[in-house]
Amino acid sequence: MPFTVEDGGRLNNFANEPKMYVEAPKKSNYVLFAVVGLVLSGGLIAVAFAIS
Image (cartoon, rainbow, N blue to C red; front, side):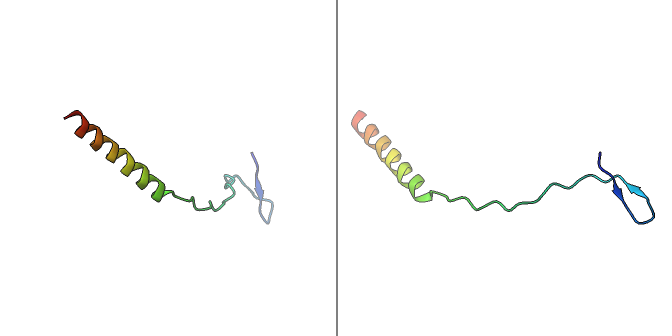
């Protein structure tokens, strides 16, 4: 376990902090999800009309 040596020779046993990083924003495909949802909904409605 690493120690930090201060002035005067005192040892401090602190936890090492992890390195920070900034995550790049993710691209969302909201338009694609909307189109797929509309196609699936339309297909279910068409099947419901065909059955009845």
